[in-house]
Image (cartoon, rainbow, N blue to C red; front, top):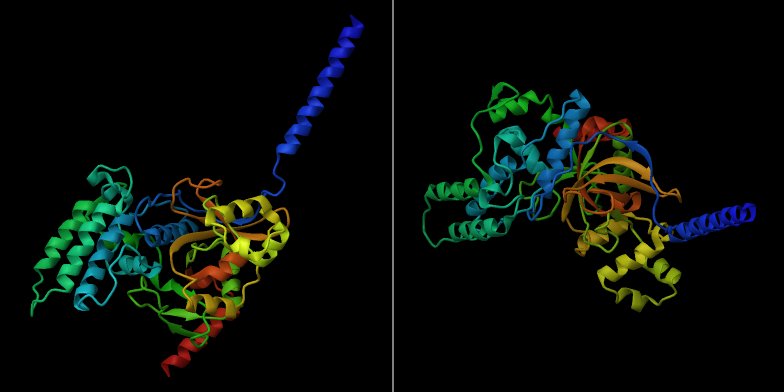
Length: 408
């Protein structure tokens, strides 16, 4: 009996050790393990679904975080209200320019700021939820823009010698049919508001917000409209050296601010799994033991798989001002997505990442959050919208001085 018991105990210990060994073998030691350095409050993750409205979702999320920081109150602001107002303004410009202006789903962070300042805002509950007016559960702009874009094009390129304002009524009807009618008044938490009075009640000073970029084809410490098609309102962005732009981003997050980020996610280093790393193809192909031609011949999906295999061991490029300018000029650095930077984390190798809130629902390995390396963010930023109080004092003084000198 004692021998049987002893053998059973020995077998149990052996199997336990074997199981632990198997478990350790199954652990991917290359997979990033993140340690949060700084994490600022954000509102819930939304889903833009099949609509080119990242600019709206990310920037409203930014302002929701600004309200959280200032008052501790949580709001769910209405994206479709902003889209309704913004698309009418954009259509008017396109018609005024006889079609020589782009009309599309995309936009910029400034579009949201402009709508808040000039038209106000309402909470999500004051308008129909996205998609519900045409039998979907989320926004789906496929049919919507297949109707909207030809309408604008037909008016803008009309052969008529004069044009009446009647087209606006029809256009507004399409907007309202797919997005919902913007309310003139509504009740929120027992109080009646107009969109303008509701925006004023949020407690934010719209003059606190500035846009920042970094390109060498324009003088530093001057403002210029970033030359991308979706920046159709042509607001100015402060142009500062790349290293100072990086300081602004870090200083903002470490001091409790979030950042509305617009940039490029079309490159190979951005994955759908929740990671973005500015990997170095030459160093990567050396680590893989393959030649460069073979690496460059891989599909985007195959490259992602290789990068996942290397994980935290992948080698990154170091971004430079020259690199940013070259990629901007040759169209490889594009303005194709907007998100919200809200935190900083490191992986087990010490590599620094920004924690970024996306608007694709709970997609990816981190339930809607992306970890984007600092190098990736610095290299791929088109522009940012940030509270001017989040800037390092020395950089803010430079911009204030430049602004004063420009008035002379």
